[in-house]
Structures are given as C-alpha cells and as structure tokens.
Image (cartoon, rainbow, N blue to C red):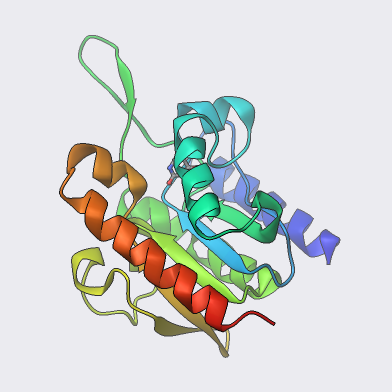
Length: 197
Ligand code: URA
C-alpha cells in the first residue's frame, strides 16, 4: 500500500515535469487508509510550499479550528489539495502572490486525486471551496448551492459521503460567511457524532 502512495507521488512529479512546473510539490499526508475525514483543499500556499506540508502557516490555524470544533486530532485526518503545486501570479512590480488554480491545472491532477481517494478510502470527504468541489463533476452547482449538505459521490465504483464547506480563506474576505461556515461545521460535527463506531 505504501508503495502505491509512493507511486502517486511519482505521478505528481511526472505531471509537474510534463507541464514545466518547476516548484516544490506538496503531497497529501495523514492517516490512511480509512481516516475519519479526507480533507481536500485547493492548492498549497507559500508556507506549504516552503515547508512541504499541506495546511501549515496561516491555513494551519484554520485547520486547528476545524479539528477543535470537530473534536478530532490532526492524526485522524488525511489532508490533501486538488493541485499539488503553488499556483502563483507575478505583478508588474515582481510581487508574487497565490492564485486559484485554473481548470486545466486541476485536470492535470484529477486522475491522481481520484486514485488518492481510492487509496485513502475515508469515512467522509470534506471539500473546502469551489476548486475541489469542481473535481466531483456529478455535483451540480457551486459551493453557495451545496455547502453544509451531506452528499454522496462515486469514485472508482465506490460511494463516499461528501460534505462541502466554504474555504476558510473566503471567510477572511467575506465576514458574513463566518456564521454560515460555523453552522456548517456544527452540522458536520453532528453527522460525525451520529456515525461514531
Ligand atoms: N489552502 C489550501 O487550500 N491548501 C493549503 O494547503 C493551504 C491553503
């Protein structure tokens, strides 16, 4: 099994090489197989790229809150991103900032994410924002339509519960979403409690 995860990482490096991405890649990590939650974010940011781990730095603070509300530990999760490199934009002054990955960039990693879900085989998938949600093409609409709802998706012939959340970064730019996000997290906690083994 570990060998399969290594193969996935190799596949990530091949994708990067094929598309001329000369950046540090950030792979998924955590408990597998069968974590309580497989958390899928958008893409690594600067801190993640530098440290080589998903959801560290500022995003890690959001993750700590997520874990605390759900009464879990980081070790109960598997954490990954839709694309495994940091998409950047460079301003005319040379300032580097994060940007949302394009649909094309996401499609480069789609097969890898599919295989990753099969290997990890979580109790539930939680997506953050529109980018990982768009990977599940069977889900109609965007995060505004489906956040906080328990859905089901089929990946390689296996059905998984899916719970879409807003991306915590969206809350920074739209404070009105904070209450919604907290309510959705609460609903997820209730669901997890109801399915405790
Ligand atoms: N935001 C994400 O979606 N993923 C990370 O790893 C960090 C920030």
